Image 1 (cartoon, rainbow, N blue to C red):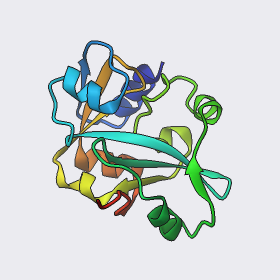
Image 2: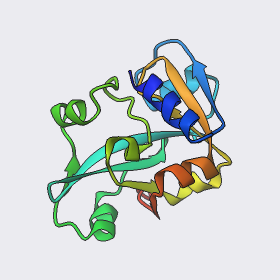
Image 3: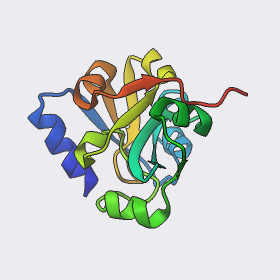
Length: 155
C-alpha cells in the first residue's frame, strides 16, 4: 500500500513527518475536513498527460488547474487529465483520487503551484482515503525537486 511505501521512503531520508488517520473521505477537501485541517493547508495531486508524457501537478485542494498555464510552462501542445486507467496503472498502490505529491517515488516530474510554498507544512492524502500526512515544506522541496510555477486558475 502507498502509505507503507511513503513511510519507508520518508524514514530512509530521515524526514520528520506525521500520519493522521481519519474517517473515510473521498476528496482532498473532505479529507482535510475529516482530519480537522483547513482546506487551504491541504494539497491535491493531479496526474496530467502533456504531449503523451505524464506529470504530477500539486496545488492547494481549494484550487483548480489552469491548463493553458501548464501548456506554457511545459511547452506542450496538448495537456489533459490522465484517465482513470492511466492513474491506476501508474499509482497501483494508491486508492483512486488519493495520489501523494511525491511524484519522484513513481518516476514522475512534479510541478508545484507557487501558492503551496506559502505554508510551513504540507498536508496530503497518503494514497489512502483514511490517512493524510504532514510533511515540512522544506523536506517536500528537498525530496521532490519540483518545478515551481503558478498553475492554478484565477477567478
